[in-house]
Length: 169
Image (tube, rainbow, N blue to C red; front, side, top):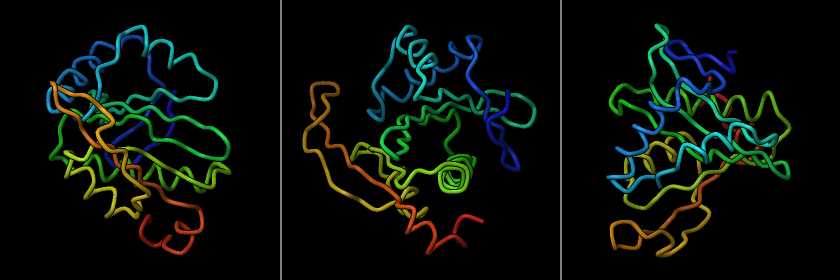
């Protein structure tokens, strides 16, 4: 079942058949330190949670592009995970722009937030370009390959979205 659509992408609720692709993408992103590797059972548990959306991103030919996990709590929407197979297609900008629009036009959340590891410079640049504001930094919060990484917290508030709505159309 379709969750949302852009010009080039569609987002559907994750089915078991996509989990192998999801695990494979995570292995690649774990190698560069951008995400922690989840087990198959952790993904399955996430798919069953009532306050969480486990979503698969496909192109218009139904080819697997990536996935994302969104959590809802206390009028906050957390973009918990987003991983894309191809990083040079502009899919990140396109899908996150649509998630921002969804958050503030289809839900009653006041805040959309995410965290990003400090070594993910491309991600940080993209999030800033889309209007996310740095709220803070958790120093040496994640251990990856015997090295501690900082985690940056970024968000957009409903009031910021409403002031800059042109950015998302």
